[in-house]
Image: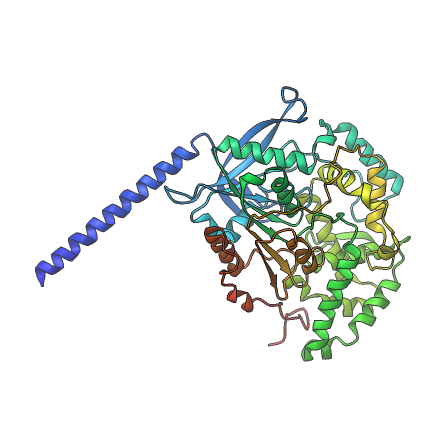
Length: 496
């Protein structure tokens, strides 16, 4: 027995040594793979969440037609796979917006893609015009974000922003971003790559696929933008549909229905009290600073608040309570407070100049030719069209191919993901896009909102999909455990 124990102990020590030796080799290989990059810590703007990564920069021509002309610097980050022998095909994550920094959301996406990251490097490139990649920032600090501005003042601010930008904004489009992605792929020495895009990032992923079909191993499209979609043109309809489904779910829930009856009628009454052309001036306590704040609230602000709250299951759960409370009071303080926070979050998250460059070049030429009647009859109304019209009367347009919005076919394996209650990219968009990809699987998250890659289930499915590329054999049974958040019956939360 003693001899056997000694033998067991010896084997255990040997195994531990081999394990430590292997770990050392992996760390050494990891250091060698990204030796030219710097250690960095990236944080979500305005949040506490952060993550370590390796950061670098890459210079590319601003104008692709002049490769020897002016160069701009792009910022990127790598989260290396914690293994000495990672898969040769990494994941490039493409952020939303347009105008969001990919590196800003790295802490969130590193967590969402943690199973993928076990064997694959994760690459986060700030799209040109965003984050630290020659950002197209506009300074609107001269205008109080909580007061309704004079349209002429806002127009002047956009003109001033354009004049002060050190950039030719005609070269900050999706095709330029796709070209940058491929330059980074080549710079890092990768062959084929996997693309994961969220919201607008799904458009960019498909633009890259069309331009470089042989370099894409797989696609994950989360919150799908179909190729033909004109960004912004269907937001009103999508919001109305999502709100109707959320309120219908409350009506089907005995507790919610008893606590908040007749919600559709209350929402309609609330909307009718706010004029699109004039604001109700409110004096409120700012939810973050605790200071008194004057704010203008109109129909557009009401609609945008409900729209942003419909993005996630957790905030969807508040909607019946907020609508019921606002309909019963002369001053909808809680909805206005939510809008204050939304303004601040969006201001920190989106590059206004990049959003204008893409919207005015890729979408507005088609949008302005579309019938505005359907938009006008929605809760959101014509506000987004009118805003786009103003900005695009100022912003220069870049060249966009005639077939930019024409669907195309690809045999690349594609995993599409949609939230059942998404107020921006509803499941019907996923179904529409799926027609382009014969080798696809479309997953719909019950009770989920905009972007469903966060839960452990969908992250694990993403890892399995990338490993096998077998959409038919993918076991999606864990999706059955997804569902909506329970409705708040009061400010303390759901009923026990």
